Length: 491
Image: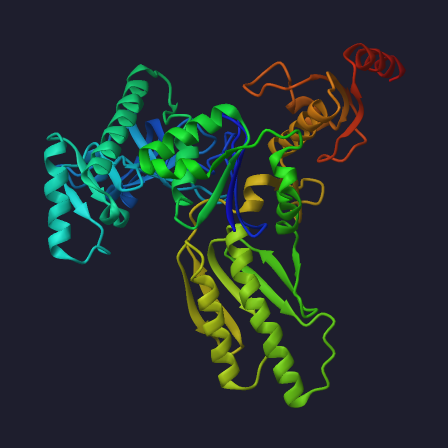
């Protein structure tokens, strides 16, 4: 059974895709000032630097790193050079098309597009293009004939493959919805004086929901009431009958804990992954690529043909597990896999076939380039967003960058989840918690949009690890305050 679980509200949404209880994908909404997790988001930016030598411009969009605009990603006009298309100090409405990483700036375009299930709305481009996957010429023409009268002189569309199964009413309904969204975004851009994000709060949720929207989905669980209403409205626009699959989760135990998601996320951040045969995988990340090593582990074959068969079995298990882990960990770019050596060419070919078949289940495009003379398998996977590790952890300063710890945002969310559970299960009105220095200064219950379900009393404990906290008391507010005053007097 395939399920979608949505936890959190506008402050920080988290979406999990599960199949028979196994976590396939884990999405977290960007809530930091880093230029990561923003693909598809629209920003009001200011041109900070124009570089004719590389036909590019750098745009200040209010994040910690300027974005990168290449000349081909600027709106077409009679000019052909970047210095003719934009000028330093000019304000531009831009959209992130490729997210930044630890070493690269995010890439943006001025060709704004709003994604729908059937259509992509282009407010600045006067054309209708139809997905190449719609091969029937008469169907392509019919779709254009239906949609052209609905557009103004300044609008365009990309008709997606899914539009083949939609009727005229559904297409018109979605176009009206996308146009209304654009008008809201344009209105915000007109009113906003400073550079920064323009997109609507519902943008991220809509993107995540649309990408997982398929007939294979059997249940959609939503934890918070406001988010539930948003999802219900979106389903009403796309596929009203799908509202019957929508479930509002109202139990005391947090949805993420109930489905065992947190434990699976923690496992996905481990360097080592066990295989059923006793072998294991080791994941290592460098600046240039991800390297995966396949190890025999507890295998103790005697050699000869028996060893060849056993090694082949481990490699086939590894290939299937690697496809799962690449999707879950959201690893992109160049990937090199060091499988265990095999002698027979037929087994090597069988391994490559198995790997390609397993990767075909992943909606993100990948390409297996083959096996080198050293027995290394080279492949690539498109980078569509920061990896899971980049999103939920930061580089550990103590070990000089050789390891990582949970980010402050992730630790705050974990504490919030635990506190929420205590408030429901134990009817706690207040929490007394010990926090390390980094979290003590980061977590402020009286600031930000996150509404804590109980009163939080914080104690500073510099001896705690940077990604550790301890809840000392949960219950009555007066007792929590008494213990807090007592502890502060002691220290």
